[in-house]
Image (tube, rainbow, N blue to C red; front, side, top):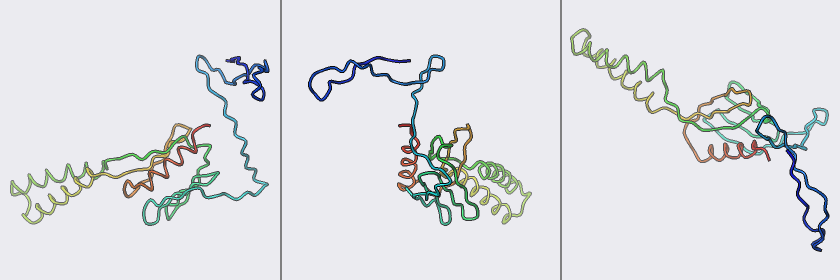
Length: 181
């Protein structure tokens, strides 16, 4: 898909150069995708150092670090480095915790019914009911996750303590860096 346009006047003299200007694109079916040129090369034999562009603390021992080549994820006991060319985008999503929600939703009513029918001792029935209600509440409150969408149609999810401005700025900075120019 090419378009011809004339270039602007040379040196502001009002003279048209007459050279057609072409826009490049790859045509697949009916959708035209613009070509993206990246002139930044990182050869291993050059032994270039990675510059840290941004850092974000997720919790006590968990952190993420953006460099010019990778997104480093440090979970305290495990570290992972994802090349930026494999990432599609990052997003902060709210998730309800299903396991505590289900266990609490089952334990609380069953123990309450058993307590009221006299099948459990009062102290055990009240204890089980309160544990079930606590689990139900904990699952309902939920938590935030940083979801890393990969270009291979998969994703990685990491828990964050809360939704903070620092995490939002970090995700926004990575998404701006991942957008094609």
